Length: 112
Image 1 (cartoon, helix red, strand yellow):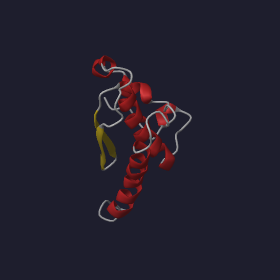
Image 2 (tube, rainbow, N blue to C red):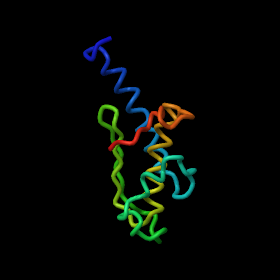
Image 3 (cartoon, rainbow, N blue to C red):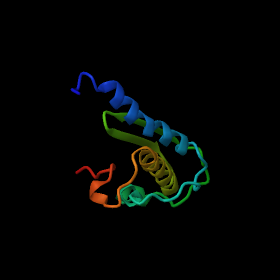
Image 4 (cartoon, rainbow, N blue to C red):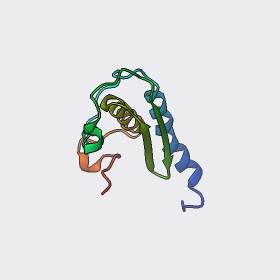
């Protein structure tokens, strides 16, 4: 099957994890389990400069996808909020495309 025939199938399969992630992101902060790759989302100096928790659970975020890339943007005031959105996206992807025991073969990959 060539590219011309595959987009409807490809889009349905790649948009489903985004939809699942959006449902997870709407959950209460702290309810999601920590994902095995969350350390990659939490490692930057900008994230570390944020306070661990915030008095407000009201923060803005946006989830989308393009082809096979999942995009998460957040206007967060705490590390907890960044971790929540990160866990939501990665858990959503793994709910549809199961994690591999070998991280090298995982559907989530580190882009450099």
